[in-house]
Length: 407
Image (tube, rainbow, N blue to C red; front, side, top):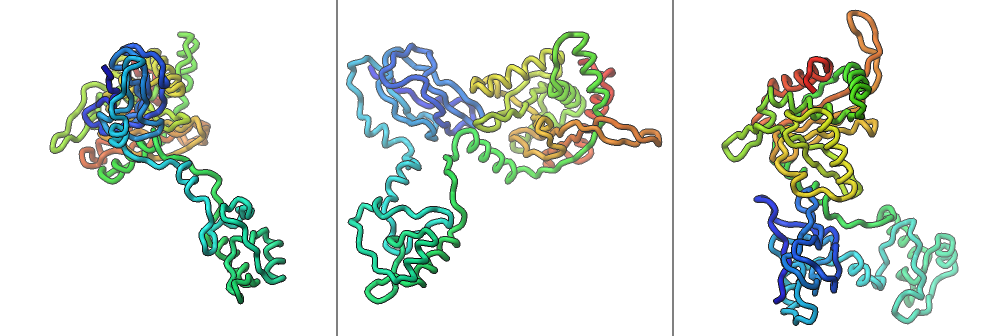
């Protein structure tokens, strides 16, 4: 019996998914429970498993297609088993026109002046499918066209009997300039990038977001990290210190570890900290679960593992689940200060800039200290300015006095 492979609903809010990569091709044998295709849901890449054993008889959905939950994307069965009505299954999928198909349609130039960009060379006449016609043009028009690299097949003449005159070539050049700069390439807007765009647009349009900025002294945490590495022999990342300190601060200021569900503010007990990671395919935010109860070495190891999995496209559903707060760190790119957009349904997000040496006045004297900006963006519907400021104060105290913390 033929078994249908469908887009499985992975969460309560999931409505659609994007085909990322087929791990099997048509005709390949598959075992029940074996991963056969990668799909993207919101910000997580998930492997769909074969619902039965057999042969992958037919793939119905191409890579990069966006599909609703329960869409049929493939068929599994015995090698010689007859297929059901394929056309009806394909017609039920969203019909997308690829860039390649669009380009294959637009082959002939329009009858009037062709729209081309200023730097774009005019295609030679021999690519036009119509039989080439004799060009009637004035000597001045021909000379100008030759100087500017214009193919007169694309210019409409307004002189007697359709003769191309100098004015026609000048108007053609004017139109070329008005059409704007030459395009280098076109890229399909899909996958993580499109899902991220959808989420940040929703966040920006539905959540009143306010940002507090605080500069902190990171000299002591840098020295403490060096000492800890020497004592334990483990290279601990600065992001791990941030995750641990943020989780501890959230326990003291739990309103920031919350979400708004209708008319109810739900405050989480667990501190599940999302760490934004840039990948070639876009931004992903995997989670360090229950960070407040984990030692710094464990957090650092987990973050390194998540980064590797993200870059190898090996993150799975459990790596993204139940995030309650997010940290976005761009310090490694030399960014001093920025603000981030809240990841719904969270109530806040922390942006972290680089650590840089600066002159600082301490007790009336100028000292060179390592300084860093923290930017807290929060949902102003449920968090007021004072609680947000107090959270930053607590976080600063922890990071500036690391010996007082239990790491």
